[in-house]
Length: 375
Ligand SMILES: *Cc1c(COP(=O)(O)O)cnc(C)c1O
Image 1: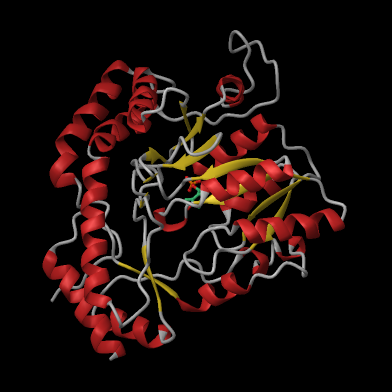
Image 2: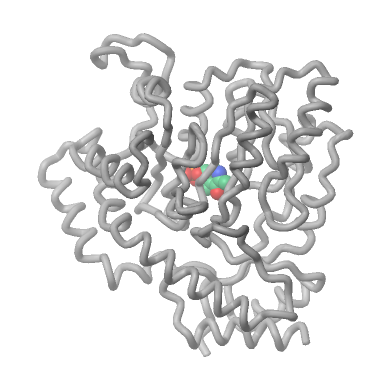
């Protein structure tokens, strides 16, 4: 047996390679490398995909800049606090901190991997006692699973705070038929190659239901431009999506739905094959996941990792160190906020191979190896 990679981003090329290469060649031919026609075409295609009249999609340079652009547009000021999960990728909090904001780490739900509305409520109380002004909440759709936007938007309303969706891992997912991108006022996406919708380099997007925020973000991503590019009405940055990346993303977006079906099929086979062996991920009712990762929980992680490595099966711990324990960020941690669920996940999570083009024999090999290691 030849082993199974954690993610094979090249597997899609047998399906789309020729189309993608033709679109890249067209950009090379017309030469409009910055804000060329493919960027607008991709933004329109994203809006059609999200299928909500209120939503504007704006391409940008990567998922981290998408967050920064969103916070700038929302008016985040130095010293203001934003509540985010302690269990996420660093960019979630980094983008707050880089603007001088104060990330406040809250816990995830007892079941699942996403921010807990109850923990946000208690974290907001602790933050207020410390004299912090809480202006926003970042929900992260970790591993592709939509966060509980109904509960989180309700807490946001209670606190007078905006709710942003860091959907770097979940574009294509939905809840009760409403797509990620339309579940809260501002949503950010990443098209890093290994994400469910990945380009051939860096890329990202911001989605918003607020036309005023959309106009500000359009300006911010091109140096705070006004009516023309040498009229600068605000302090912005260079955060555009490359034309070539938009060209790569267009054919990829057109198969995203069918790829998510294929990922769901892999998830179903894993759930069936691994029942009773490890704790497999469960989706909230009405949720569709983008399955950026298939992450199981086990008490015997070192043993399982050793067996997977031995068999050449890709696996990874996302994330081995929660944000409140990162040396660059631990000074933000407020001791009174309980992060027990985050700490529990950190020692037990393990992600298994997940991509749409996994073959039955590979899925079977993963299941058999996990079973043999733990039974
Ligand atoms: C990947 C990721 C980001 C950052 O995206 P980049 O495109 O790599 O900058 C932000 N948040 C989360 C949760 C991510 O997984």
